[in-house]
Length: 325
Image (cartoon, rainbow, N blue to C red):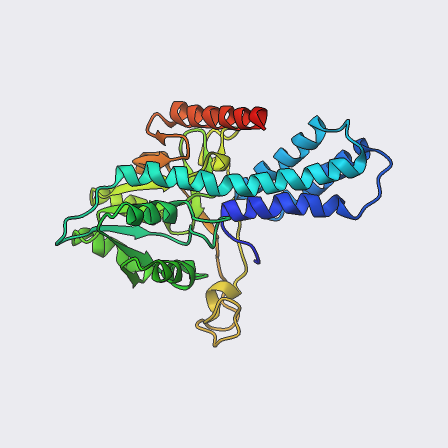
């Protein structure tokens, strides 16, 4: 796994579409569009859970179809320009999302910070820049709010320990790293005020597919009356699926679980040959999510209405920007 993080996967996919046709020879722009469609099928299959990938490749194909009257070389340049627009928009989207999310969370007092629990990695290493759930935390810091973050390690690839802890350290945000299984106990002791995480796909009813362990966190948070916020750019919302039960969940290799390090170059921590079940993501039902934060608005139940409204607002914003350009 070279690229991870739903927004980053989408950005990489858009450039992948350009690379798929960059060096090929085409008799016509229509032939180029057909080649893009084949590339989309191939790329989309690489990461079926994260919808940002198919969202980005679909946007590239649609833009090429709308520009098919261009000469082949000009169309190829336009595909690259669209990929660059997708990446530039990601940064702007994350900052708008961060502001909406930060407005939901009160900063602590001088004596006591607001304690957030963050799952996986959703920051600059998972997006083009800034981040989604971590973008909310960065915005809280920029607003001068007194915050502290509990970072769960996020087994088996340890994105929390390896990536999020590093990002927060670079930003100077107070934190403690915890093992995944400690989160429920911390909530019971009143040590966590808010849970924040990102998403790989959100369905029309508000069900959230995200890094494995998100479901556990959300259920325990509900039990302990801790607020749960999902940070989700509209590109991650899939209105074509009615519920999370329709999402294809990736299952990965055993070595992620049985090896001491993520590439299994370290010592084994399990008996040789032990069977492994390693789902990379889980699905959290909407009833455990207090709000879904997008770049257009904060969405509340009923999610069927609010998510559709957010997607519509995003489409209108992009159309307006395209018209002005």
